[in-house]
Image (spheres, rainbow, N blue to C red):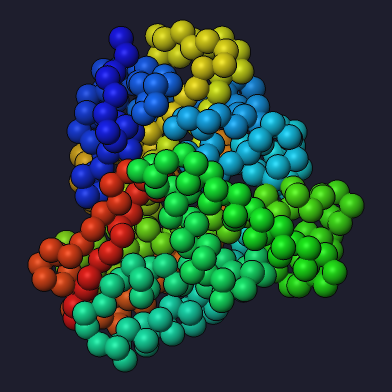
Amino acid sequence: MTAQPSPVPLHLRRHGADPDPALRYLREHRPLVRIRLPGGPVAWLATSSAAITAILSEPASFGSNGFRLSDPASSAASGFSADRDDRHGNITVYDPPDHARLRAMIAPAFSARRMTAMEPLVRQLAAERLDAMARSGPPADLVRDFALPVPSLVICELLGVPYADRSEFQRRSNQRFDCNLPFTVRDEAVRQSRAYMARIVAQQRSSPGPGIIGMIISQHDADIEDRELAGLADTLLLGGYETTAHMLSLGTWVLLQDQQTWHAVGAGRNLGAVVEELLRFVSVVQNGIPRVALRDVSLCGQQIQAGERILCSLPSGNRDSAAGPDPDAFFPGRQHARHLAFGHGIHYCVGAALARLELQVCYQALAARFPRLRPADDGRGLVFRSNSQVHGMESFPVHW
């Protein structure tokens, strides 16, 4: 059976923080099902934690093979683009052994020691944005005034990219993830983004800076060409702020519905557990990078043929009973909240530690500065993204 098409594909439908209720039925009864995507292509959709984990754990069976597929199941539909040249630099669609080669180059930049050294900067940047909000006075747009700027500043600092260019790469990022836009518009945004990063790489080749781009040039100069490095840096820039920014705004919306937890966060209590539960409950990354079956595989009683595409619904997997009792509820006291918000397996997000640091620092700073924060106009101005690979908010007017 093949599900019928919809203006918004099933795996991208959201209701506030919640995935579409139809995913719960599939997760419990048909955890691997074929769906038809806009434009006509068919893909498998995995909805249970067990099915998703099995797929992401087996790169020999489920990889990407460097594909660029010109339909909504493609890498471009996830905000990225990669052609058949295996040196495009988009590590998210690299298979072994090239995936390990690139990951080894960037992993030191996200080490525990480096994250500890980054914490004062994150705190400073958060405080500066909150100071600006306080000076301007309410109302404010939490997305524009806080959630987007802080992760943008952090990733620019980490990569060595001029923060002055942020408005342009934020615009292109929105286009790349917005599935309401024509493929040609989104693909052009990818081209522009990679061209921009190619110029940054060329500048740093002549004078390497202290950021990740300069570090890779200094340590691996002969091992990576400009085109591949530009693609790698583009992927890190895009992934380094888009998801964290929308976790900040959407997570704040969830926290404000639980005033006891909001005040505990402001006091710095139980921050780690609260952030893990928010990552599980909110799950802004809808399906990550689509997988391609590299051989015939049997999974969940279904036969997947080599070459068929598979989407993994991470929000659905995170609402699985594997998360513990009442997985559809936000429960900040949940112990050891298992989740797939950062993916799983070899493509587990290399920047997960940075994201956790930013979320903990920013939620606490925001709640401590504005303990009486609330949606402005009873939330009437709040706008959710409607059809995006990264779920979040377009605007979140707040008062205090």
